[in-house]
Image (cartoon, rainbow, N blue to C red; front, side):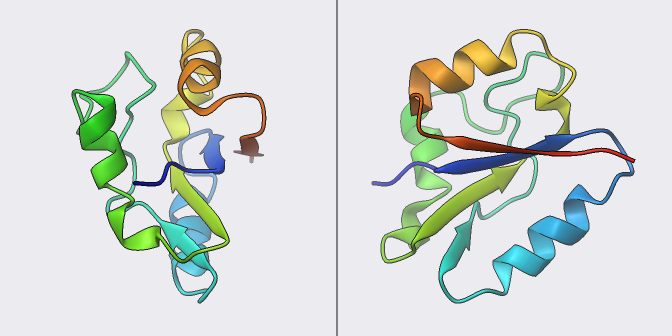
Length: 99
C-alpha cells in the first residue's frame, strides 16, 4: 500500500476543493478517494481510525508518481504537522492554500 507524498492544507473557502479536483484529473497524480479524510487532525471526525484504513484511501494510486490528499483543517490544527511527520516522514510536501 502507498501513502501520500504531498498534502494540501489551507483555510476554508480558499480553493482546496478546486485544486483537489484538478489534480485528480491528471494521469500521473493519485488523490485520496475522498477529500478531507482529516486523518492527521483532531478538529473534525477522521474518516480513518488507523493508518491501515488511511492507506486504503490510496489503494488505487500504486502506479502514480504523485499521491496526495486535501484536508484544509491541517493548517489550523497545531498537532497536525507532528502527526504528518511521524507517519509520512520528512519528505512529504505540504501545499498551503490561502486567500
